[in-house]
Image 1 (cartoon, rainbow, N blue to C red):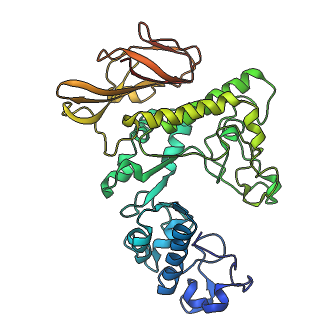
Image 2 (spheres, rainbow, N blue to C red):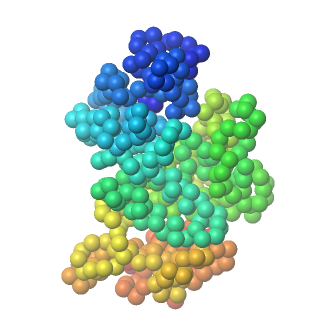
Length: 415
């Protein structure tokens, strides 16, 4: 966190930078140096225009990377690092210095591309080798599996890496850091267990934290003893994580989601240094098969290069050029047309690569977000086998592939 310090606003304590050089280290209102610009919501904003501030940031990053072995950094409220008096610019010296610093050339640099300041939402606007948290991926996947209307087309854009956001900058799909949950907001378990935030313990009358989470408690608010509810929640969690790992881009997993960690519905647990905010690793013993399923999803992504291509995929043009291509399929195997996207809840995503007239590689992702079972016709380019499925009843494909409601499967060529 370089965007603010713990000294707060004008009434805050003098414990660090304020006592060294207040006007150099902080942004203040022109003509009123006692009034701090608060683009962070934390009382002050560090002045990234000043050379000594830039030096402080770079020296800190170099130390953590070279001496302490930290391999990458996620920058909180990152637009602050690129904002001058005239607003945010991707060519700000601070952003360019971090990107081009020789000592940091092997470090991962990731922006949280929004803050509360003016023009604070800057997704897709960071330069060069910066990667960015992609909240549009988060919302699209949550809405789709929740069953929101007209959410399928948005899901498709996110599955193929959010080219509409990142391609114009000249970066690869890896620039988009996809996620379902992070330390800000619900955990995955809470996402499928609560419709509303429950932040009463924070002492702000439940007003803090985001109110719009696209969550779905699947019938009961909070923990439940209902076997059916808990089974559906487990299935939804697997579907969400599988969608994340089987999408183009860089996936981010929140620690604890692999075993169902909960914060009791608190989606802003920054102030909870207690059982609410802690990770209870004993949770891994409650459902070890879930953790194993997550492990298998991660391993499958690593094994299938088509799930992590380094260039943008745009349809099936020029099929024999050795590059990856994508096709969107109806359950009957026909290609999706524009009018099919309006309300479809079941679709296939075919990734393939042809070389010299032959199928070199293929992955078929089948998604059934409806509540009814769906039989998918399979492309006839090859015989198929099931590599992973969130439907435990799925068998070897025969006369297509039958998926139960609210399920997902990945198929690969049966060689």
